[in-house]
Image (cartoon, rainbow, N blue to C red; front, side):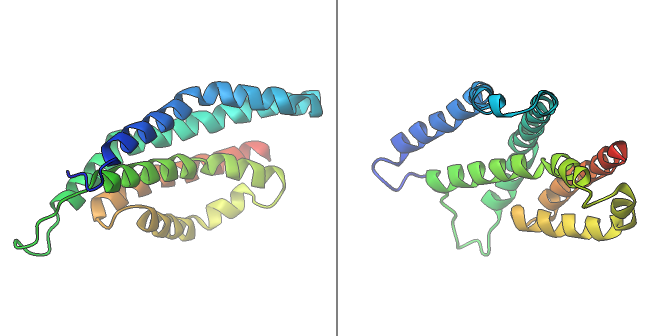
Length: 180
C-alpha cells in the first residue's frame, strides 16, 4: 500500500476515527433522536418505534460485521492480486483502500435492512407474503443483480453477498406473513 499525498495517512487516521466514533456512538445518537421525536408519538407508536429502531440497528451491525469479517477480506484479496499482465504492478493507495472499505461496509449495512423495509411495506398493504412467495425466483434474480452492483467484480464476493440477502428475503416473507 502506498500513500500518494502528504497528508493522506493523517487524514485517513482522522477519517477512520470519525467513522468508528460514529459507529460506537450510534446507540446514544439513536437514543437522543428518539427522545426528540417521542413526544410527538402515540404510546403504541413509541413501543413500535423502539422495537424497530433496535432491529434496524442490529441488522445494520450484522451487515457491517459481514462486510468487515467476510466480504472485504475476500474482495481485497481478489482485487489486490488481480493483474492484467505481469508487467503491470498494482500499488494500492491508502485512500482507495479506505474508500472501498467504507463504501462496501455502509452499503452492506443498508442492504441488511430488507426485512424492515418489507415490514413497512407489508404494514401499508403494498406487499403480501403470497406475493413475495410467488415472485421468489424473480427476487432471487434481482438480489443477484443488486449483489453484482454493490460488490467488486468477482464471483466469490457475489455469492457471499447473495446468500445473506436471499436469507433476509426469506426472513422478510416470514415478517410479512406474521403481519397478516
